[in-house]
Amino acid sequence: MSGIQRKQFHMPSGFYPLLDITLVLASFAAAYYVRYELQVFRPVFDPNRAPLSSYLPYALIFAGLVYINYRASGLYRNNRGRSYWDELYAVINGVTNSTVVLLGMYFLFQPLVYSRLMAIYVAIITIVLLGLVRLTRRIAQTYLRSKGVGVQRTLIIGAGEVGGAILRTMVARKELGYQPIGYMDDGAGKADADLGRVKGLGIPRNLRQTIREHVIDLVVIAMPWREHARILELVQAARKGGAEVRVVPDLFQLNMRQVQVENLDGIPLLGVNGEVVLQGHQRFMKRAIDLIVIAVAVPLWLPLLLLIALAIRLEGTGPVFYSQKRIGLNGKPFNMMKFRSMIPDAEKLREQLVKESGEDPRHPKLKNDPRITRVGRFIRSTSLDELPNLMNVILGQMSLVGPRPPTPDEVALYEPWHMQRLQTLPGMTGLWQISGRSDVPFEEMCLLDIYYIENWSVGLDAQILMMTVPRVLLRQGAY
Image (cartoon, rainbow, N blue to C red):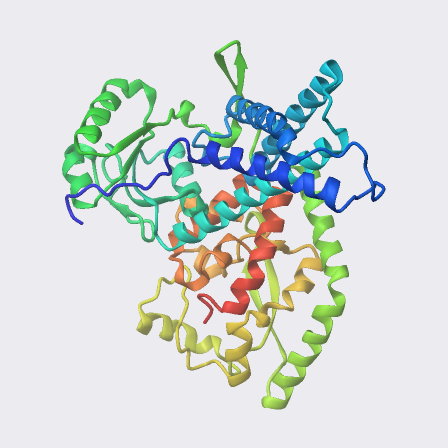
């Protein structure tokens, strides 16, 4: 593949509008069946029954109205950042507006053949069909992109705050279809270090050659605007190298979550919000959700707790629980509770094993660790050894979702930017766990944790909790 630009697969521009129109027409047929064949909310005999062909003009008008609404709302534009719920809202809004117009036409023109009830059926069935199709498309697209199909190999130019935010987002949200291959920067020594699997490719002097060597599909430039002449040079070089180009303003090195964009009749107004770290009411909400979820799940986790404790006790001598000092919110230490999964005095062998394994001492994960017991191997692979973390959550030292708490000796090796992952309560699960756990390098784990802190929401926590269950069952990256 070297030196050959990969082609990205895109559906023809008219595919999705045509699909929507087809589904709208199918909705009319389904609504006709419900209205006249099933006779829902109607007597068996209906003197006003008309053949399906009589509704064809209304079906075509309704399909045209839906298309116009969707086109106006930008539903057919390629918008990777749009969530499913935003898309579903646009679907519902477009169908609702079109239904209101159709009912208005019925009222004004009083045609011989019409049914207000059928119009309602059409609206409901259309929303369900279009919503399901879009959900299915997203699920299929996310699966394919997780397997590397249809992704854009991306190079980021600019190692500042904005470049870092872009990289964190691409690493955290693989469903968007970007695969960050590396980053470059003009600053000496800024872009030589790798960030996990994302390579530091040096200064962008030989950009065209780098694009060919690493088969880059997309170049994202995130440099200060004062270097506009340099940005233009890089844009031209990237295009000549055969890559697509996107330019992102650095906005004086502000975090993008702090920037609010308003539209004044076509003129963009940029405002600056406050800190991106969780505020008081957000922390209260997160804490309340933690306690509610724990209380509701008591019938599930309490029997497991007792069974695992019994299994550890029956296996041999030694304590059932294991307490280890960890670093929590803002660097505050606490004792984290876990089930003991190793032989007694396992910590004494840790330093030697880490050296022998060559693992990153900032986040060592040892495969085939000789210190692990038989029960311990099972509960570690299923993450059940972390079930006593619930006590730390109840005490307010941890949350259900957040970065995993590091040990003091790991934090001692942190670089300044790594410390950002300590700006929120540590969690039992998080983006790192659902992204591959121990298979994810340390720097990528930090990028995922910082992205989580910057983009926290109740919905994100719910998504992570739901995705944790299949990841635990599949035992991905667990050892």
